[in-house]
Image 1: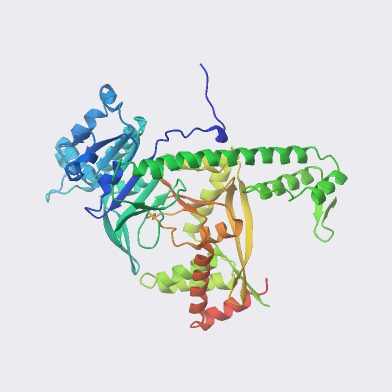
Image 2: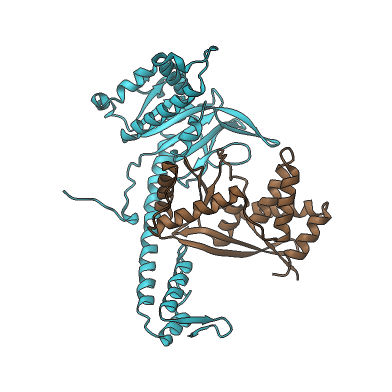
Length: 311
Length: 204
């Protein structure tokens, strides 16, 4: 059996599997944006499928009960997902509600007298949600969640966050590659991946963070183009930098490792040190390796003379 | 010309004091003045937990076994973070001069870990909320000083682990200038703080 361990610069990002969340007010167009991902399957907890313009509707699982969703994630049923690259869950908040109902059906003690979930109930939701996330990740598909927004007061400021009950909001965010806040500004629908004082967002992919969602006229491939393809392209460029960086560090390390005496050490310091075209942290790495070498050879640096001397 | 030193700790301590109006302003003012006076003080329990957490991750990077911890999740999290920062450079300093009007400042910081294109800062907090570090001066100052493209806060409460990502951008200098200007404007109305700043943070 071949074991395929890859170095960072060899990592392939073709058709990267990404996890994202788009949130904003009802009616802003979150579902349509989510469905612009590569080959989407809509898991519709919110009856959102029918609000999407007819020509942009996609294959949909209209969830009546949470169990409907669990069914397709069973190993025996995973082949139903073969034709899709992205699972779109619309909305995350409604999915959590549906999950809570499912758990209460299984164990009515999780419910308080007023019908809401008990503390123990929320603990069960947290566990069930983590189990679901693991199952979703195991499908090897990209996953896009949508969520409504809620406002929270932090000090004097109002900040917008996705409306997800319980601790699931925090649990999901750590797994997200991107989270965008969608709103309408001056008649334009925009998605911002950059967090600021007004709303929370996430951009682990390091992509262009401000996206304008134009009115659809042709193929609905907005997220595919602006996120998925952009990320694949960026990864190729990043890998080139990583390769150049690794080659540079290897060269510097080899040169420094060949230093055997004080004369060579000072020659390196005066004619080579800090002379290369810096890539990221290469100057700091060179400094650490050089001073480690001088210590190994039992020399120290004299600040006044600006050279290494015998101890 | 007199140049003043500016660190993320100073700006964050000021920000915390200003934002803390409704919680325990007396305590946060005391902390703010302690920071301004550059007094050495014993770390409190929360700070000590943060120091221990960072040391445990460093130990994991060096393949040193940790003392037995009560919480299994803690060790898993230390492992996860150590995997990210392993082979990075620890405690590197960064500095860069910045002029606001006619006044010169030296921005200075000590970074937990730098590796390839990323600065990492390890945080231990018992009450994490999404975007907790958005307003921090730390990522702004470190990104500006180093010119590196990425900054990641690696955050844990001992049971769970989150990452907040920030990126270098063209407007980062203005964001830092705004923070420093807010601080300087405030000092105009607080003589005690102003005197401490002018005596303890000048002449670098």
